[in-house]
Length: 393
Image (cartoon, rainbow, N blue to C red; front, side, top):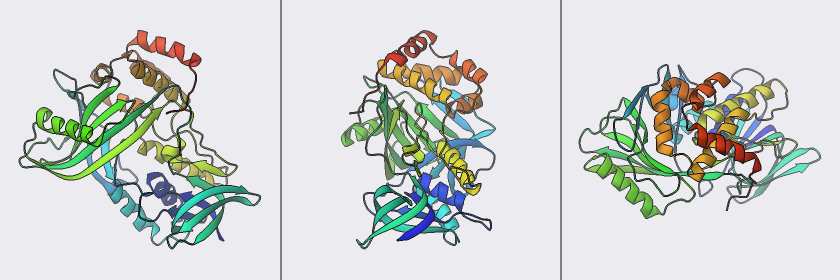
């Protein structure tokens, strides 16, 4: 029987971030066991995380690229250029992040890494117990004072609205200089729009000939593999006119965007963190910044001997606004490309990004909201309290 003060399940962005923040670094710290499944289907594929922040960041050593200039393209007409200074839009690859945090934990005096598959977490009189299977097939158990679980839940909570943000990206190298590596294309709406929801291209250039190019949809259903391939071929060939290119790697993702109430506490001393604990912003799909706020608060509470309930990564006001937006998009009351282009045209870029990150005041929220279609938004807000919450199919 293993014992620790803290068990962290899953070594993705949330689990690694919490373990990193709990690393002793010479001061008093709880004993931590970080549990990661053996190589195989339970480990997520390499992925890319993006976020915006000002100044030096905690994980800057893992940042692959950063941009102070963003571009949004409407379906037709001139591009919208945005200087987001003092913010920077940063890109981290999961391999780089895992390497950086892994080096920090390699010589830790209080954080131990364990390769095992978690079978279940049960409540016992002495506290939570994590039942697991080691890589060699043997069973074991870990008793901990606190358990933080970052694994994806088996199903989504009931919600009034659930849309899916799903995408496929190619890391490409072109035969000629084809990218402005000083600018990230945040939303390019020159893609064919689906019957429900919206779609856009997304381009993160890392050099004149290299970039991550993605096709993204907000819609009720995912595409087939051939559907994503066709959409990316159309976008790279017909829209971006990249010419001959080499596909270096592929990335696929699926992010539920929902107004469901996601519980952080699931037992007396068992909590969910990261996307599993509501760190994803429902209106954008961004998660990395939210889980950093969450794990920072948890680590501070543990060090100070307080009840370490993960805080909501986004305020109740932000979640209420997201619920209205999701419903308005899902019903087709607002035109997604028109709405986002209008906001980027009329709202100062740094304020809009802080708004999208839930870091604006009530007055700032109102100043952003007045540029949205007021009638459809008010109609949607009025009907939300009467809508039932239903499980996602």
